Image (cartoon, rainbow, N blue to C red):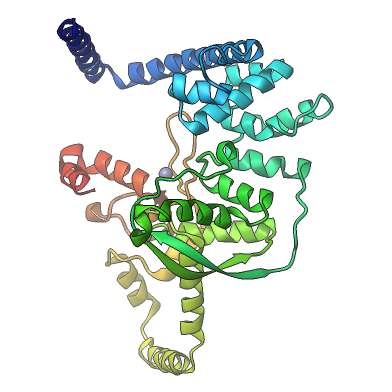
Length: 392
Ligand SMILES: [Zn+2]
């Protein structure tokens, strides 16, 4: 019997395996446009199914059908029984409860004007009185932008002065396997959770972690935990600061493609400042400027030739192009959508340098690394660029 069950399972699994390889083969020969229209249709279907799932969850919630099955909450039912991750269970439950009260949100989920994360974000603050207003504010927005749009609806009481708090943190050598005690609200939404936990528990998030590690530490793992002195900084900034911050991060993105945290960022900025203002360096720079003035007695024609005969674009022209293109990728897709990425920007020769293109601003544009690569592949051929792809 056990054997037969296992064989049955194997049959089923190899059956599925065959189906998947057939699908893969079918997709490989599909034209680009068919592939794109196909995913569009699937996306529409997926939205419908997701919404249906939400209504199911809502009804199951109302009837408390999880109780007879041995789960003490809908959350447990969703994670254990349905196999959702904690964060997606949380989002679905919030959304299910929300669309029960506000059917207009369900319509927007279906049209794609609203996604589950954004609905979860607003679920705690919408009321019959403000729903129209809030929905119109977040319609079509990403989580980040929606968060900004609705910030006025949930002003937080917080200290506006700077705060520096010395803390000791446990650093585990192994990956953390404990769960943060406060549970459901600590789902893995990246940055947003961090801000939430700071405001909600007024900076207690560290203590929560500390306790958990202590629990684990009281067992066999204490040797893996080291104590480290750190400082926790808290300060308020205005939107203009955030804009500047994004700009700096975007400039640094070429150097740090894996992203950069506040500590790294501040270190870079502070070191640059100190370097710039060190008296020794100032003297050195003054000397270089003087000697440059002496040697720069060349005609403007010479200068023009120099500019055009080198693949390296002079800094002044780079800056000009950067400013003209608004510090964003200028690639425009067939559908008229401009990329506008601020990440990994490169200056691209529209007529390639190798084909006689020069360094005049008219022949230059800002592209993100990915679009620059795509354009290069189009110019030089995919086979030529293939060897670069493998290196990536
Ligand atoms: Zn781009």
